[in-house]
Image (cartoon, rainbow, N blue to C red):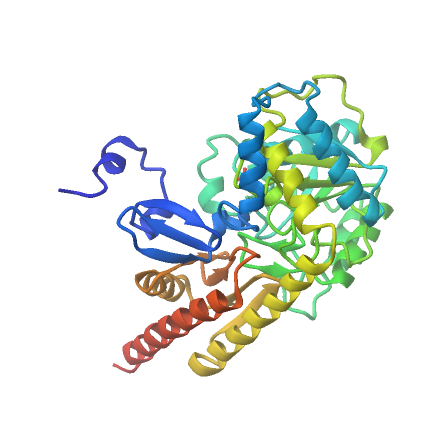
Length: 428
Ligand SMILES: *Cc1c(COP(=O)(O)O)cnc(C)c1O
């Protein structure tokens, strides 16, 4: 009997991650995934950055169970609820206020990242009266049409079925190597009335490109980008959906860079529990929405409010957690550099920042073979990048050092096997 009969017979061919990891998962705890037949895997995918606090974190789970047992509201459109009140209070006190963003307001968009990107782009266009948006090469912002127009990936863009318009693409930091200043290039195009680039409403940018291959912008590049935005009166939207919520070692990926985005999108790990939840955080003056003008049935997921609040209170009221992310990021980097030195000093290199790092391989086939080999040995790990060439380590931030070392041993062995096979293939 085919073990995957129900999925293969009844689910759309759109399914994708399950093709890389053909097992049926039943339980998950912390950084561990467990299949229906009891096999355990270390999770270096973590919901593509949705499970920063791991699976079923006990503190968050307890808060949610208590809330359910007390018949707390599950759905309430955008009505006031006690759970939303607590979230707004905690998010303001713990995240926004200490980071100099105390006067920013929060919009609850629909519950996905793409929903918050759509809302952010729509708002920027409404406020400025301009339609063009600047986004960057290899950027990923979601798969709904507005967000997809800002996304670079051809595989996703090809499925749009309509023209993807009103976005001008600019080269991301280091797109042409570290000698070419892509910000000067952008400034020149925007300053030239005959360049053909219409004055944009906003620039949307990821500080570390999650799907685009862990390209990381420097503080200097981000500060120059902010300056160009001010000069040309474009809003700066930071899409922190994947790099935010602690992934790079700080709550926001940009907060040690000395910049102040006009609009920030957050989703993925915001609920902390894997529940759908997204927000647009904006400067108060930009909040020019009419009541209900941008709508959605699932704006504000009360269960997500509960777990998000518990996550903020548990992880972000001291520096202990952020410090541990920095330390673990350094450990993973060190282990990766060892892998590079051992198995491909000329063809492999480490990319990314904080706990959003990976190893770039010569091509997508090599990276895929490494991930498949790692999966055989108990590690769930995926690729990203313009040619899917980057083996991406996106483990839960709460992972133990022991689990990191075990996962890196598996990865080391996978690189050893695949890189040796590649060298043999070349020689023959
Ligand atoms: C995942 C992601 C999105 C889209 O979020 P969805 O919930 O999949 O719609 C947007 N931007 C970035 C940077 C992302 O990583």
